[in-house]
Image (cartoon, rainbow, N blue to C red):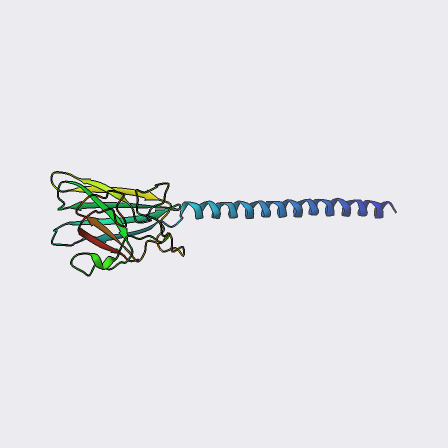
Length: 199
């Protein structure tokens, strides 16, 4: 009888330790899985795709202008960077136009300003509305060189939102200055450089 009690006690202790080991193993495995999932999520955030497209500007109206435009999308923001040369000194307008078609010598094959929300032409951010293509004006130096930077969350590169997607549009540089008032284009003058935004 003593032996049976002793054997039962040993069996209970053994089962108890095995349960504890199993529980510990389960909890360790669960913790490792959670840490792995957290690590994967963190890695996903770190390696989030940065979408970049780059284009060469074509001269229009015999302007001789050259340059490059780069669009980079990261964390819901699109940044435009342009580097141009061959401009006349002073202020010029730059806009996004509705069609990625630079085939005509005067640049008019790009159509009007990109305006998917059907707003009046104005300066970017105007309370009364503005075109999604109303970037604004920039300055060229005495040598005819200029750098332009513009950033917004109101654009995207190749997304499904047609009120934000810049793919299939064109960048146009104008000879003159955008007055932010004249409709529908700001009376910015001839189109002197063009590039189509095609992904």
